[in-house]
Amino acid sequence: MLKWLDRLRVRHILRRHPIPHDVWEALMHRGDIFGGLTAVERAHLRELTTLFLHRKTFNGVQGVTVTTEMAVTVSAIACLLVLKLDLDYYDGWVEVVLYPAAFRVERESIDQVGLVSHEAQALSGESWSRGAVILSWDDVAFGLVHRQAGHNVVVHEFAHKLDMLNGSANGMPALHRDMDWQQWTVTFSAAFADLQQRLHHHHKPAIDAYGATSPAEFFAVVSEYFFTNPQQLYDHYPEVYSQLARFYRQETLRRRVARAS
Image 1 (cartoon, rainbow, N blue to C red):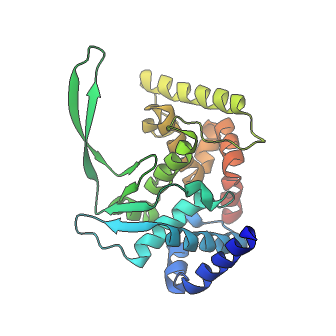
Image 2 (cartoon, helix red, strand yellow; image 1 turned 90 degrees about the vertical axis):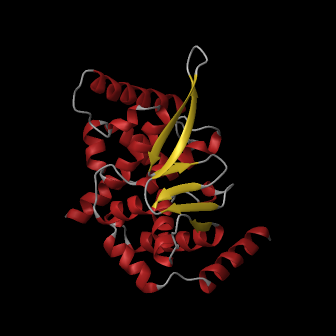
């Protein structure tokens, strides 16, 4: 009975709160990240996006008025990550906050001798474990129109959300039952160490150097490549690509190749 009621609620939401056709088509045409999706995948993504918009609250700060186009853009990219998973992966929190541009945050750190220092950072995005996803709209919009390999702030922050599902962000999301956590650990540890070594020896890194910050940031960064430039990720870290393909249950490289052919 519960499943039947859930399906009934879903159909009601999809029927009563449709995404405007012109808004959706413009996004699919403009956003390179959606390239290569089949008609069936796009239809499913539209349903997931509609449900996401119904479940989440969008708030603008510092003068931002969140338009339908803005909310749909963020939601569609977020739902691309769970296209072959389940929208329940984003349960447990409700708010997306949009700043007009990069925002400043204060960080407090304590060194090994107990000295407390304060540091200000300008961020394009941030995710809280059981709280909001915070994004710079300028960075969201720029990444949508001007494709930069390995850079998509929405993918990055929502990858953190997936990473946090089984606790703190540590680069180890809740893997599927048919995945081997030891294989994941060995694969990601080796690639993470390789990136750090390249930077240590002043060699050009294979991917964004920010991924060397921590295992959590490495997972978020390689997720960005997986969805924006899977070929580059595969060329340098094929086993990482393979693990991500199993986790996200998507073959983004095949999708890109099919689109180009």
